[in-house]
Image 1: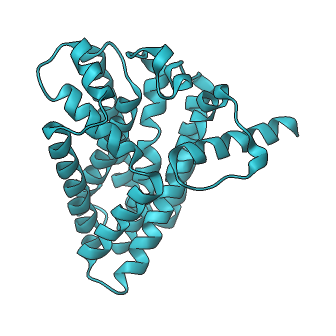
Image 2 (image 1 turned 90 degrees about the horizontal axis):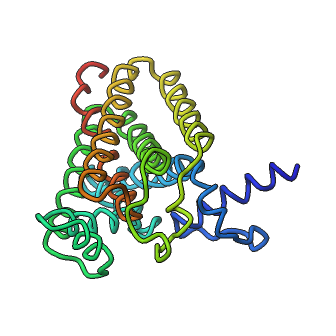
Length: 266
């Protein structure tokens, strides 16, 4: 019972860290829990995806699909406080130019957004909106399911980085110091099991989606490994901002991979 209660606490810690959702006061907090709760990142992603899909579905009854997609993305950004988007913008600023490792780390610590960050955000949000709109036009059910799956799967990518790569910043001054420690294999396996379960539910709903899901698994995994290789080459590992950037890249790649094969299963 104590172990189960601890797992519930870890889930709420992950939910509190990545969203604006309030959590019960009895949950409490200990710094070590922030690293332990990484196993629930994909679960929180599922909830964020469900919220975004619900807004998308409701808005599509009132406005054109393009407006509904914009409202859905805005809703997910509001729910998460733009947490991952901020990491993407900072990563673009730090690694967009040809600067040294030390200079890149310094730039990413700056709260101000630069030209690379602004352009990166515009391109990221625009491409995600366009891909989601095209998926909705091809198959509304697939579009909603893809939104949930992409949010879930993309949050497994940072867990992989935390388990397979080293922290590149100053661990003593990290914004979320426990995230600078390596995630255990059990943490990664739990997130992987959750994503497999979600994939199974989607395949059970419509077996025609299986080719697209397989493509999304491959594309998402390849994007994660590519980000890991790039970050290790440029920084020697990852920072907190890079975890957010990786989530954004993988989410976009998943949507694009599903869209590329949409003619196969619609």
